[in-house]
Length: 393
Ligand code: SAH
Ligand code: SF4
Image (tube, rainbow, N blue to C red; front, side, top):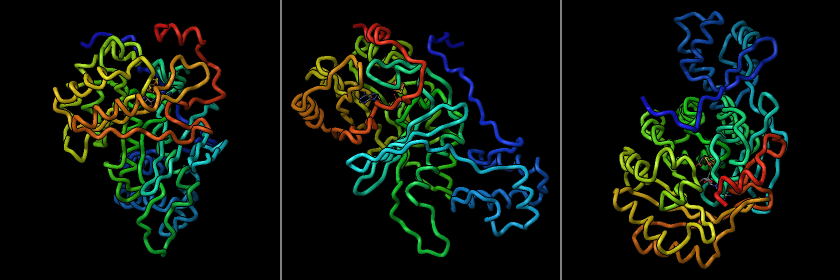
């Protein structure tokens, strides 16, 4: 038996209530879709084919209306219409930054809101999606961490964020048109609100749908899951999702990491590094990203940089280190390290033979930057005093 953690993950996922008891098909796995179609009267013999057809309509063509599923008989379409819907979370606000970053505020069942950010770059477009409303964890530098966990998102709400963004980008294929290989939405990062490994099944099912070659068809190498260090979830991610991994590392001693990323009290740096070292398929092309937020005077010394390299080398982990200039938010208890300090830190890492890109802050003018996501409407807030106490200030 594992000792009980003070950090719990047993929060309910509350499914969306639908009109007239209709079931939403978005977010069902292939097996789940088959079950739903059988329950609605589809013949066993035909079920596999119907799953394939409907799957392609929803996830390849982006169709929302059963009437448009032209390779299905009329009666069958009517049956689908009676029993099911194809529904996405609703966009209630969209902000576009000077640099082209788009932030969507999305409403889900229960009236809660989550944020989704689209970041266009020259050779790719990355969508940063959320896995929970709020977060159970309380990383002291993170704005989401000041918001209590409201609930886990369903698989439907997670994959729905991707579909919603494709809608907004106008990126569903047009029948008959030549296949466009350049994708506006080419990469997914699970770096929005919430800890994805505390909502494992829903995140897994949603990512499986996003990777399915008959649908959205994103390569597993274009999906990065970021975790604060839920150690048992790391091996499971490799086995059941197979995507790339990023770790919110942020500190090089347990003493500091206990404060910045309190889950460190449950699984410390050494346990975390061991789990990372055994992440399979570790090769140079699938390196683990160490995310490291630069906080003035807290974790940004030369000694920290050397210790960080030492940790990674000691465990022989193919890694790149992504330095994130701290994004301040109203009431945040830290300051961003100076540009000179960040460059000096990056240089030590680079000299040791590791890539050390400094993350460009995108969408700062619309509060879309890393760690700034937090729904403005949430009332369950911690006080400034609580935040300061947790940060040990
Ligand atoms: N819960 C997951 C994923 C969401 S956070 C995790 O912690 O990894 C995505 C990234 O943004 C993490 O590396 C997180 O540490 C970082 N982050 C959070 N707040 C930030 C802030 N204010 N400035 C810069 N990065 C921040
Ligand atoms: Fe949660 Fe990640 Fe923010 Fe920590 S950094 S509070 S795990 S969202």
